[in-house]
Length: 114
Length: 113
Image 1: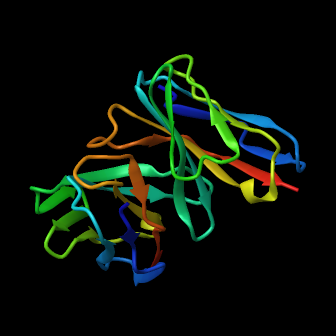
Image 2: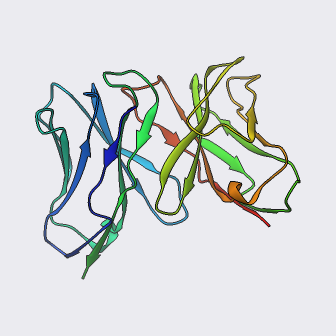
Image 3: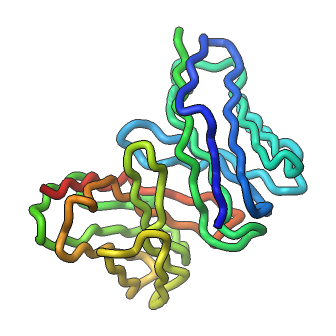
């Protein structure tokens, strides 16, 4: 099965800076990759999906890249705000391509200081 | 739309007791899922369903059972609760298995003592 690594448990940045979170996978090449936001005591909320043939996807201040050669996705939040503080999860299919249910990384906890 | 609704939000069980975690969605999604989330361990899939009457095991199904009699409801049953089942449980739904985001409920925090 697939393995996901979000290699920063926590990331602290100053308001206004760009936050960059990393998601690496180790086995099968996924057809897509998803990013979620989770606030304390709440369920994850879907943010973005990027497909294998898309190098980059944007939504407002969010940008996601997908490098199938490096087996890596980067998640950027530009002009970060304290309200962006949350845990961010990446997710992808368990068996590569579009096969299998989503498996989730352990998440990166982002703290944006004013 | 309410999305995915889970009840109860909190519950304390004694070892050996049973309970059902309720999950209902009003988006007419065929796919539904149960995940558990333990500190530092990420979300683990317990069971999933691709439609009414069809369920299948996920990564960590032992100690749990599910049913899917309607499109809307996907209850999770715990028989003979054990301390290892102390966790936060999330129900989710999606239009398809992949290529679409999942909609999660707000979770049930279960403690087994």
